[in-house]
Image 1 (tube, one colour):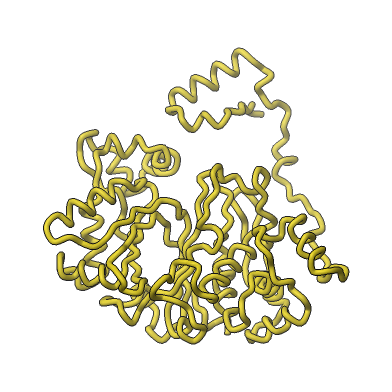
Image 2: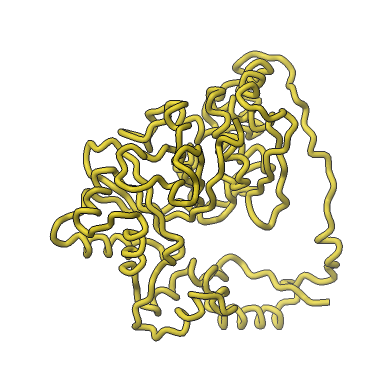
Length: 398
């Protein structure tokens, strides 16, 4: 059978030829670096073990129970609302779905088996986060995506959640002033519930064991959860843009959130240059989501004639460019896009053939998005480096 060579993590900083030479040298000079006599069957067969946990813990004081949850790493290390039987029952009463119905499956990384979870297990985490029962359909919808908010990537990414439709006002979510900050109960606790259910229902999220984010990410505390300001936006809402009706209540999830470019307004004279510079500051592996205050959204219409989000997105695609040689020298591009280009996947295969000095697009147009949020106190806006994942129905979980 084949031999295996372990290469330390510095291998990601080496070119392919260097890695090949490193492996060859290691093979020749040190058999101790080889893993021999490994049988594939032994390493790929399913390991069966009991995943069941007791539904209840022994009664104790509030202080001791809080400590129990901390010691077992069931929390984000902030105080929780203890999930008593009565509180969980009240949460379950907010949905027509049965407690034992499977909501979805989740895992921290593609190399681990996904764990499935029920409505009741999601309810427990919603209670712990301090969410009200009326928020529960939104939390269930998020859980149904199967997209974890506790991904184990070493790059320390977080998630972003955007709620659209009538549910926003029905449960009192904030889409105006301070919407992305700690100033609204629904925004804060829905986002926190997403994080708690992710870590607890995917099999854990422990640094150095099941979480490998080198620096971590403060966005993970509530996964940047907010509602789009549909009423003040000059464009169609995000969910309508993606095929839903205005009367549908939905939740959309982004992953890979870490980089942010932030500025004030869209200037009259040099706005094109300003935005190009902002885009050039983003890592080309992670596409941009423009998160705009309504003031800025209207400025984009006034300055560039972008009367639809699609027109703005096309302009972003056309103007977010860099030299091909520089593009292919970004580490994340080399790690994840270069192999796809070598396999002939477009548009990267064509981009790989470009001369080093040729300008190439940083992002695909279908990966660029626009969301409107804010209270119009000023025209601040930001570019979030983020991967849009999916939009799902909230109404289906009422």
